[in-house]
Length: 441
Image 1 (cartoon, rainbow, N blue to C red):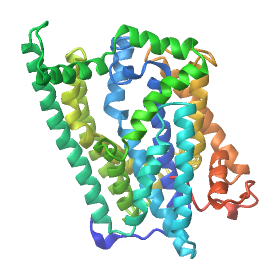
Image 2: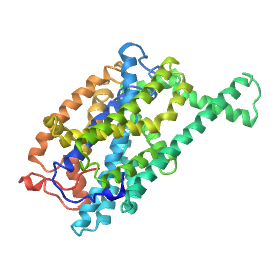
Image 3: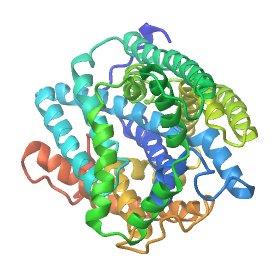
Image 4: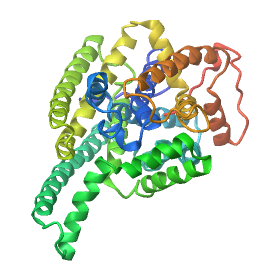
């Protein structure tokens, strides 16, 4: 990408710029549910390891395989790119209107953080709003950097994570070899005890004990809200307390930086030709899918050995970027070519209400799976979970465009905007001219 093709975001026609971004965001949001549904409906460890719950034969195996190759990490990567792009559009428009972009941006981000805390602790432990808000605090000061620097910095972060995974896998193999060499009932030195802890910690996380699984099933099927809150809080606390201090969250930050750079280059705005979008998208998606399929086949052939799964993680960052970028290009090309207009319109509406629809995923799913609702947690096969996904998709794709015919924002977008400006914002759509200029990233 040449720096001289930079496009500075500014208020433009919705069909060229905003609808494209919103359609991609809507696609990513719906795709995130493809992964999250496993954690909503089954024990936490079953998302990555189908042997934990339900098994890996027949349709359960194939749904896991498709998930591994096309969904796992890829949809969150795409959503992170959209978040980064949204930062560019939001701040550039505020500055173009002479508004204090920093004031609005930070108030908006801190409120997102507050929403994330409530969502994570009170509704579902897999919240991404809080860590995204933390990443967002870092993004504003660097928004003016050149696209090549933003994309380069994001790529370096992903490369660093890939290098780290190689060392991590090497350490795991060494720990396994040393563990196997230690006599079962031998008195352990401090070093040997550390080796055994590393090995057993990894294997137990991959395949929790029957007692631990039974307890998780009991809490979410039969337990009280207080019990579920305590179980959820222990998970959320571990994740949120290390967000800024662990390179693990660089995968989100790196994708956000890449998204910022792509937005500045006009990729979200449709500056490329349709042919270029389709070509780049097809090549990127195909390359990522081939590498992902090799890793999935290797893990499946090992009968889901934890160390085979760890080996596949070496390709995790390159694959998720390639597949996510492929989706971005193909969807933007479809919008630019005005293909499947009805579907793209529904996706864009879903993306414009991304905040409301994301929380609705959690509310509907927990009501269906948890004890205070239908208590279906752990009662469905892996492939059956996707019947629930399809129902939620159809609901949101149908309701979102209808809602936006009458209102400027989704309900939570309206609440977020009103809190940001500390003033009740107009909600009802009075005219076409009142379509929102700012969209949740």
